[in-house]
Length: 80
Image 1 (cartoon, rainbow, N blue to C red):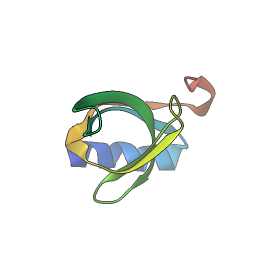
Image 2 (image 1 turned 180 degrees about the vertical axis):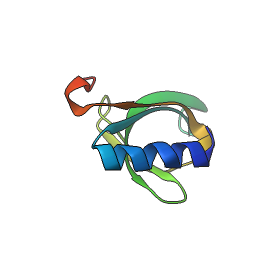
Image 3 (image 1 turned 90 degrees about the vertical axis):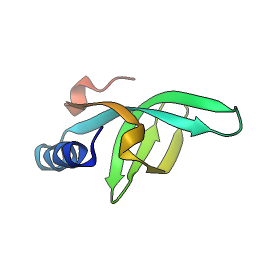
């Protein structure tokens, strides 16, 4: 996704107290392939910080181009 669109979604999430949930395809040198994961954006700068509840991992420096899908959800409808 493009950085500008994600930035607008991030600002709305903060303003309206929503969660920005994203799917990212992350390079995994250990596995020698890419891994698709879904998580919550918890910080934004030039890159994104994402918490992945399925694996309980926190990954910083996620590039916008690695994010393939993004959506805003209310905290009460959060997926487990």
